[in-house]
Length: 115
Length: 223
Ligand SMILES: Nc1nc2c(ncn2[C@@H]2O[C@H](COP(=O)(O)OP(=O)(O)O)[C@@H](O)[C@H]2O)c(=O)[nH]1
Ligand SMILES: [Mg+2]
Ligand SMILES: [Zn+2]
Image (tube, rainbow over all chains, first blue to last red):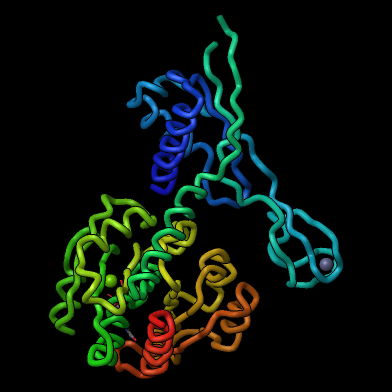
């Protein structure tokens, strides 16, 4: 039930953003989800439907997911490569001295409000 | 009718929690209380290791335990019975991790003036607890031999956030193809600074080295 927990954090942050912007209805929400973030988009959307419909601010609102491809940087040869098929090991030089550049995001990109 | 206004937010959902966690850590520093966050898969030996460690340290430090791993109080009662120290049960309502706010609520159930060391037994899971900073001074995890030496490759985030990796159940090494040197190397790949303590919580072998490390940590935190 990882995704349901995540949804509660999203709702908390969206409520806060709505308050700061004087918004009383949110019609859609766009999330940036990294490919290796451990969040499963389909589960997140299911959990969103269930939890968001319990909130006046969010009832009926759509969750859209923008997937961020995971990219790793190799310290040894200075190249970037796709994380998912290669993991920690650089496909160019075989080094394990690598770190994730992006792909771990779980972030709220934007909200849409009826005008 | 279909007109919408877009408001850009661009904020990580972990950001609030990271702030709460930093605030809690600072408060613990001011109050001289050391919080250790202990994580592992279910059954790796968190409760058994804690009991052995506490029995080595309870004459030197005032210790309390917060149990969050399971939603019943069997572990809290087990620790209280085996060590005599204060142990409370946190109710996570089926959540897969604890965050800083939940940890703070748990700490409210303790008398912090009477504690030098508080250990949080986190929810048994190698994924979610790694993503949420609890506000602890240090993170420790237990990997048990039957789980396999390649766990650092499969759960990179957990190993990269831990200051200490305890390798438990060394008594069963002869029955598994667990390669201790390989495991140390995989841990180093994820986290070059992690300390590794091989132990057997059942017999207590090796637990003294971990307890010594913890004692030094608590003492330096309180200065
Ligand atoms: N063989 C062996 N079993 C152990 C050891 N440490 C713990 N166990 C057993 O592993 C099981 C789970 O231990 P427990 O401490 O409850 O794990 P937790 O779920 O992480 O708190 C229990 O049956 C323990 O007796 C050990 O060093 N060797
Ligand atoms: Mg336990
Ligand atoms: Zn390379």
